[in-house]
Image (cartoon, rainbow, N blue to C red):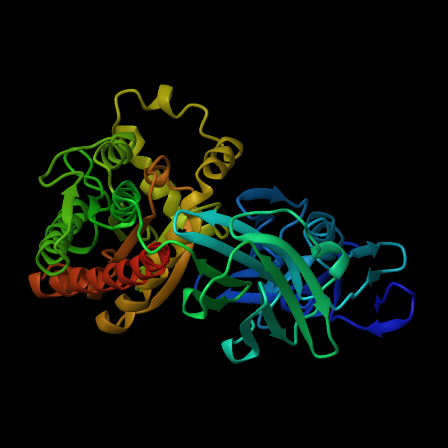
Length: 482
């Protein structure tokens, strides 16, 4: 049951009891909190936007990420055809401090209490820029441009937000920043008005307004010319975010053959050939710098692969492997799957990690280097590198979308596991399993140059999609700051 702050019955949530703990669907809870959500079906991950905060929840996983920090619940989330379910009491304990709507849960009465203030405009931040003033208005939902208006009158700039709801006592500010002398918010019946007292007159054409999912931006230009050093800084920032160097990592090699599949087909040979073909495509069609952790039949230690990527300033890391199963009855297993760094959720994901991590037995100092590689230490390593988790999942989804249909094979989805080769790379990183060489049919296809070329083309297509969308999102915002 859900009650409002005064105890009056408000609504109910779907729920089920497991080991004395109430589980509820994340989407229903988000709707109750008037929070937007984004669901990634391939990764089985949902993002809940609580004001300016992002809460990321993964199916069958006890870890949730709030902004850039990981938190662990004592019990994992659940998953079924209705989506991801969370243990309510533990989940509320973690998100309550971030929720714009005050919320609490009583485990004795199984009652969720909240106070809906109907506020959807949370804060106003004014920033002084080189060529003017930027006003950031934090919102709980997106306001379409037809519902936004800016007008000037007698030294004031008025921003009208139709459907906006504010707490005028919180937003009022007399702090002077940039061209803004002070802010006076006013709530009308159907709209909110933010009144900005200006220090000097501006022209209407120098004002621009835009809206995103949780923010309204008002830009007031006061200088027509950007200093030369600022242009240089912007160009350097732009180059930093360009995906202009890609690291391809063909798995195994040398004394490590990887999996030996049907007909004695060696994994190390298949993935090296696919990697070389992918390199040619990237250089020819995307005109990017491409480096390979190995371009011949030689052995490279796992830690050296990630170190090589970092040392050479890679922007993406793509490790290529081929799959296999040991049991004869499973020779029918087939398909492609793409992995990100994370805690293994299933036995098959753990088996992949065991197979790919087994490379360490070929390393001279493996017992010393990996002696402390436990689940607990892995969690700490993964948490320390969470800055590229989202980008890695997006890259994995883009590649995985291309491969199965084109290769006419099973789509095994985007997964995650504790893969040592992905630990330490400071960039978006994925591991692609291009097929099962233990499957006679897929092994036969993977022996052919034509099929390997097709595999390389589809990995290339996924990388191209990710590169274009990432650069458009990041570089577009940089260009808008000019």
